[in-house]
Amino acid sequence: MNLERAILLLPGLIVGLSLHEFAHAWSASLLGDNFSRRQGRVSINPIRHLSILGTLAIFLLPIGWGKPVQVNLYNFKHPKRDYLISSLAGPLANIIVVICCIAMAQLTMHDYSYGAYAQPLVALVHFFLMATASINTILATINLLPIPPLDGSKIWPCLIPSLKPSFGARGIWIFIIAIMFLVHTGALDPVFRFAVNSGSYYMPVSDSYAFETCQREGEAAYDAKKYERAERYLTRALRFNPRSHYTLQWRAVVRIQLGKLPDALEDIDRAIALDDTIPDYFELRTAIFDDLDRSAEIPASQPVSRPANTE
Image (cartoon, rainbow, N blue to C red; front, side, top):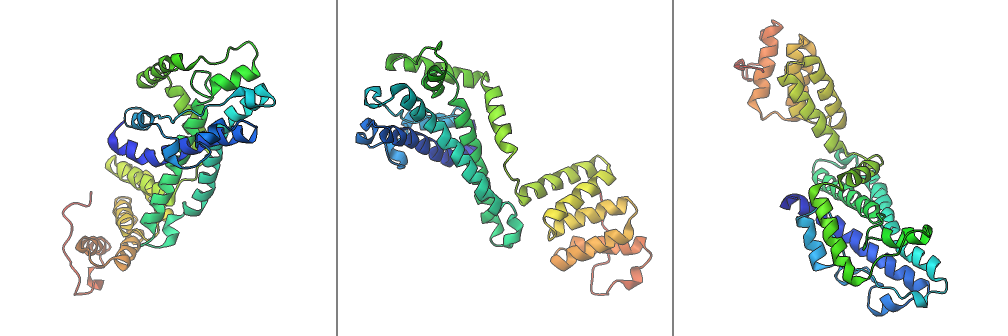
């Protein structure tokens, strides 16, 4: 994993791991086992839960881990049931984080509506909400695998009597190395794709992301000389951000290729109204007037040179 991506995912990982381990400790404490409470694990302070090696792993692998919460089964009134509940609490906490992030993202998805000054910040908040939701979806999913020391190695034996419980602490590192190997070789990619795709279905796409996607598709279609397709994508982009003078200029150029000169003129007039400091916009309008044989209508104070190539 590259450094930039790891840094972007790190806040979501810290939140996910801290609440995951806190949920284990808190649920165990509620069920009668105060061993983790005495260790200070019933806390949302990340320092109490993060493992140095597990945190650094995010820079090499698409996963990380925290310090495992220890429980004493003899303190539970109903050992098997309570052990199952405390083991499920971690993945459940990650699912709750996902739900909360998706709910808050509903407030930030229409980032252009917050105005030009606030939009970049709102878009950044939306991105981190989606990144946090994605990584917590992965944490919840991968922890259900029946491989020690993952929670699944404790959950499934409580549900399926034929399965054996996880091994002791001495064998844990063997499984950790095995998991790291599986991740590095891509053997667990189907699990990651399933988790991300399942979560992405419910995650709201921000207007800025949709706008940039449509803009790129429109430019690519123009380069491929598929002008009708380019017009459709640029029109979609303007639905998300109608104040993009750059996109209006692009659509004007596309519409020139389609022979829709009046529509192209309307687009470039709108672009100039939004930003009248770019000479290329005036030159493009001049070219449209020339093609319409209406050059006499151009105000004398505006540029009249024709662009060398509108493609």
